[in-house]
Length: 125
Figure 1 (cartoon, helix red, strand yellow):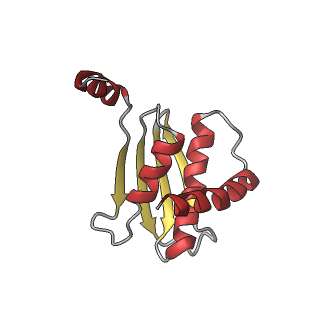
Figure 2 (spheres, rainbow, N blue to C red):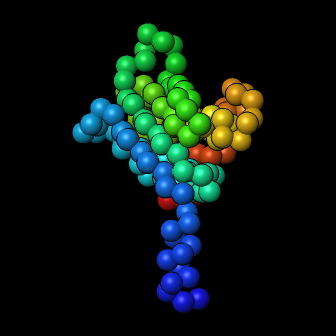
């Protein structure tokens, strides 16, 4: 393969954009988000915002909302750490996957997927 062929393949890949809020957040999610998007949604460009905020009054650790055909926001409880944080991000990313593939928004499926995804992600690192 020559260099121009490699560039052509790189340029064909859709671009994902990620914004993490609040700006300057100490919670780093870029690694797990990048891994998931390249592993499971490599052929579609999406705009994703991950917002860390207090969800304790909501009784959940995370939400995923579709804002447009390729625009999503994930809200994550700002007090999560370690595997609980990573599992929650993966759970919500699985909902993005469900949206993009016109699959039902199945919580049971997302809970089952988060455990498998966490194992796969940890083995990747």
